[in-house]
Image 1 (cartoon, helix red, strand yellow):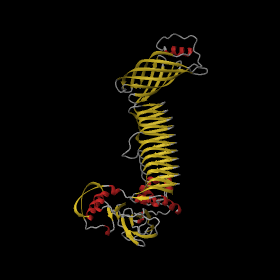
Image 2 (cartoon, rainbow, N blue to C red; image 1 turned 30 degrees about the horizontal axis):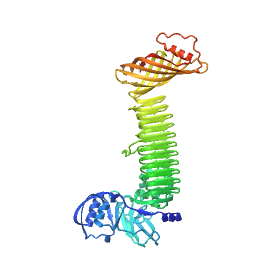
Image 3 (tube, rainbow, N blue to C red; image 1 turned 60 degrees about the vertical axis):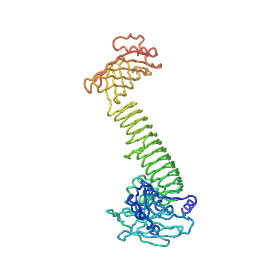
Image 4 (cartoon, rainbow, N blue to C red; image 1 turned 90 degrees about the vertical axis):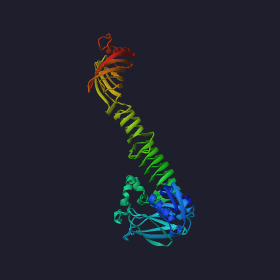
Amino acid sequence: MKLLRSLILLFVPFISYGQNFLEMPVTVQMQNTSIVSVFNELENQLSFNFSYEAQLIDDSKKVSLNEQNKALKKVLKEVLGNDYDYKVVGTHVIIQSSLPPLNKRGGRFSYSGQVVGPDNQPLENAIVYEANRQTAAITSYDGYYRFNFRDKNHPVALNISYTGFRDTVIYVSPGQTQKVRIIPLPRQPILPSDFKTLEGKSAPALANAELQTMSDIKLVRFMVNDEALYVSKNLNTFNWQSAQVSLLPYVGTNDLMNGLTTNNVSINIIGGYTAQIEGAEFGAVSNFIQNDVIGFQAAGVSNVVGKNVVGFQAAGVASVVLGNLEGAQASGVFNRVKGHHSGTMIAGVANITEAGNNNPSIKGLNSQISGVANIHLKDTSNLQITSVWNQAEKINGLQISAFCNYTKKLNGLQIGIINIADTIENGLPIGLINIVKHGYKAIEFSSNETFRFNAAFKTGGNHLYSFLSAGIDTYISAGYGFGYTSNHKKKTSFNFDLSGAAVIDPDAETNSYMGTLYRAQLGLNYHFTKHLNISIGPAFNFLHAFSESGSSPPAVISKPSGVYYGQYYLEKSIRSQSNQSWFGWHCSVRF
């Protein structure tokens, strides 16, 4: 592992820079004042602290400033000039003279120290971070830590962080050993006994609130060591490097700094853990990202992202995003987005979008395509296609399932055997069973010129609906259709139905299917009560005869007579095996 890390460092150029406070805007209007006074004003505006060696700043020098909403780093350049470097660590902005590149081949030296609290008791699990070499250590049970550094001529600036205590920055020299006493934050004293040991991979108790998001996933708990997760939670610094290579999430270029480093290119031989990807990442097994992915990510097994993805993810098994997705995911088994998504999710088994973010930042087209199920909670979906189950808070588009679709609000089409919606705002469910909780529902009994006894179940929105129907006379019919009603809540209204029904001869010796009866009918409706409606009107019929039916109609067919003359055309069509059409009527009662 040491050899691997040495090889990696030879080929990966390393650059880091501080962010956060340095990018924040400040306004300063001061005339002929000391540099320390300027620093005090900037600290008050952004609630941070400057850290620097006393001899570095000439406080006798007077400066005048008139800056409006200008980035802190630009204001510092106006005050100090171009010969200084700045790093953000915790709540500190460290000021140093411009440093030459670190000599990675320089001689080694070691440094050790101890971190204690105000009562002089050692603090276990404090994070000690060396800002110039971007490396960290965690104190042991007795508060001690130890570093092995290169380049004695490069200054050592240590930041000590401990939850509930003030960040502390110290400057040390080779061979120096120092006890550092840190002070609790007001009203938030945290004692060492409040922490669990890191031994045996047990995370610190106070880190659990953050780790619950990533560590809910067993693979993350198994592959990413607790020390790296703990450091990324409790240390506020930002590093960047053009590329990194890892064997495992804890064996690679960055060691404990994995979760605080942004990479343009990340190559993980087995798995890797990093703060952010702004480019491309490849992992033979898994990729774990603490913050965001902006670009492309591919893994043989899984991708897990702690915040947002803007780009494309591909995984052999699963991709999980704990923030929002803007782009596309493709996985062999499932995709899961805890926030909102805009784009396309494709999975062999299931796609799940929880939309748990109360302030969605992503808008636009989104679609889910899977082999078994699509679930899109608390948000609008434009397209869902699967074999078993589609579910969405709202559909503005199309739901297609070989079995069942569900949405609370439908603006578009549902196509499936079973379609369920709470409300249809502007759309239509197309299926054998359509259930609309807050919509048009009616049970209809009717008689017409062809079938004396008919029944239908109609359900849908306020205007468009679908229905199942059945009729019985000499022959039997079973059909499906669509309809439109002007306003089913008014006293008088009209409706128009289009349907197709199979005509069946129950006495046929071989094939009982006689053909398909297509029917269009207009209804003039009168509401006697809220739940009782009478409808009458004309109809038009077209029978497409089946040429290989097993029916034996009578040799002589009676001429049409009486109000049920439609039976004549049915028998004529079946006997001649030719299509027939005729006008008709209906009289219906709806409940």
